[in-house]
Length: 115
Length: 114
Image 1 (cartoon, rainbow over the protein chains, first blue to last red):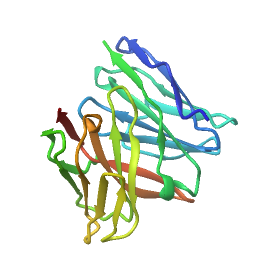
Image 2: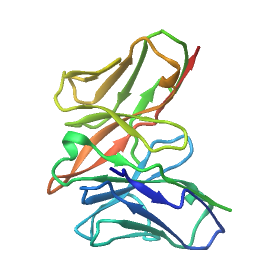
Image 3: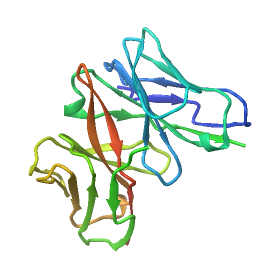
Image 4: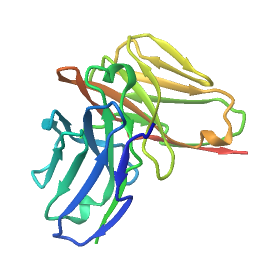
């Protein structure tokens, strides 16, 4: 049973460019959440997707956008990249209504470096 | 963004020793979780706590949900080298319709000396 898979694992981009990160949730999960983890920090909530809609958003600018597809997979897009966007981007999947019992299942993340 | 305060920030211990770490918040949470993150990996859930005062064990790990609901504690007994990693606490916040987001702590970096 595959867990959460993210691609790519590493990425280097230049300031001002745009990037798309991808996530496939764990089998049976229908909700995807994205987190940004800066070096030496805990993960910070970006947004959550369920039923192909953004459910709630953390304190991130509109440069961060996302999408969820009918198969529950998700993409995170970041436009006009800044140096400060360099971080590990984590995708977490869950089953609606069961979060409080099992928490999230996290992927291994995409390490984004902006130069 | 909001983060919970964890202490200690990092610690070196000898194999076989017990470890204690804690997490505090200015806000109340109804659910606390503890995660472990290995290098190059995402966090993995260790223990979930659902009730103030609750004490829950998972093997050598024991966690407690503080009575005030503003703190939580994690203990690791008889540490082994594979316990090395970063331990995060997380408080759960409801988003409605049975979904949640998590506010994570700043992390405790544990290194075990053989």
